[in-house]
Length: 428
Image (cartoon, rainbow, N blue to C red; front, side):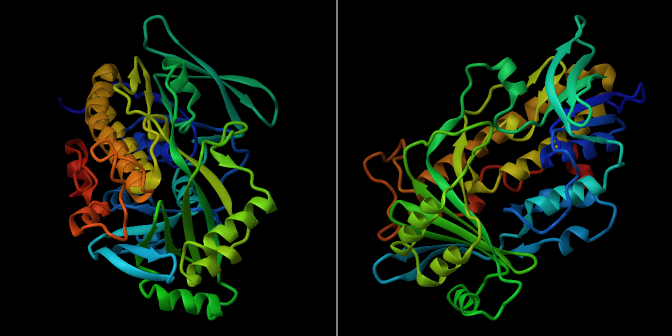
């Protein structure tokens, strides 16, 4: 099918996070008009704060193709060239290496900085800040979609009409729920304490010198420390920060509102500090104890969806495939979703919208399904939880065979190095 040169399509994107902004870039490159509706009241500042993430090589190339300034992504991130898993002896407080991959080639980014870079590279009129999604309707002939949104500044109700509605409204997607009201998120069995330790004021402190002595590849290594029934992840971010995550098995907590982040009390933080002393080496314990305002995420995914397209409504990002974080896939899948959708729309044109969306779904569903399930399995292995094929023998990093340890590596992710054919010519 040759690229269509017909009328210009218009897409309404609900959600201005990384998935929605990536999609906006890809659709603009495909010749589409785009409106992004985002409930946040103002644009991101780009401040180096908040949680970190890892960008795979393909996501890096796609982002660089959208940014206006060459090499800006490299300047805003740090390399993660090593993926290392090690076991911690909780009694002796020492680490022993299990696996090490020195060809990892990811980059560590702040979520907030990446979002800011993507936003600033868009035309200013694309994103409508402070607009809450209310509802949508599809025309009888399935050619138009009308999205009702509320301006938080004026309280006006506004209708935005387009050819395509793109749901980038996250793992708790209300648009997905309109098609799949019985589809529920699946609790993983554990939560994650998270924090970002800022050592910019004293990079020669005892805490940082001790950490770098114990973990000499900080600044280029993604460290996974495994204990019995638990594991921690940490790596360095730009501007002298350490991003750390500690996963703790526990019953599912009760969440309030539409967020998977729990409010934590000083007593909860103190209990966490006491527990961390019993598990990890002193150098890591000091970093966790000295981190200001740690927070707690409840970890969910969902059973992979068989479809992510209904007429002229399409799901992308966490709305399409909620996933656990163990394969570093959430952001990377979202970026690739946007890129593939854009190329499908460019290829088929708005006159053949159903064919474009069919190809998008056909391309992405098998890949993201496998990656969600792999991330789930990897998390259960590292948390010492039962697996379908070895329910009576959870993973124990203290006695695991080399073959079992090889399962821990990120490079085993299905389709990790695959480039969808439809974007291949733009990448090579």
